[in-house]
Image (cartoon, rainbow, N blue to C red):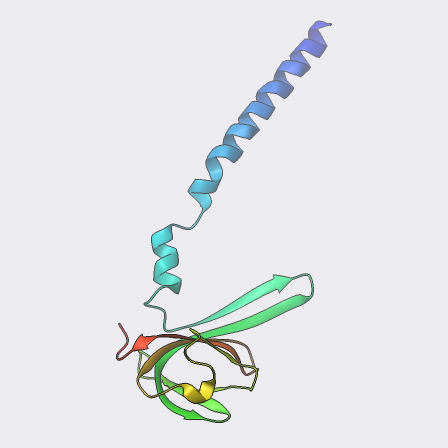
Length: 135
């Protein structure tokens, strides 16, 4: 091996080691902290709009949290923590969890819920979190 090829090999090796070290150390430093994730999407969440870019295009999701103040065959009305009253359309295909709530019609006043839907569409999922006031 010539001096030039040894030098090139040494530089290549050093570069690969440095790149490996950077990639090994970078993800924890660049990742969102768990506390921040819990603060954004945890029990303090009032409402959110999440835009996702996928292979089929952009999808816009809405998340609302509140206390049920009304249920009709076509909508559920929530009072959110900031006082906003939001009427959210529902469909016959809207799922309600946990399983003891089989349908939207079984939702009652003062239930705390989290509602997931695509923008301009009926709710896809209503997750019952408990009874009473918001935290």
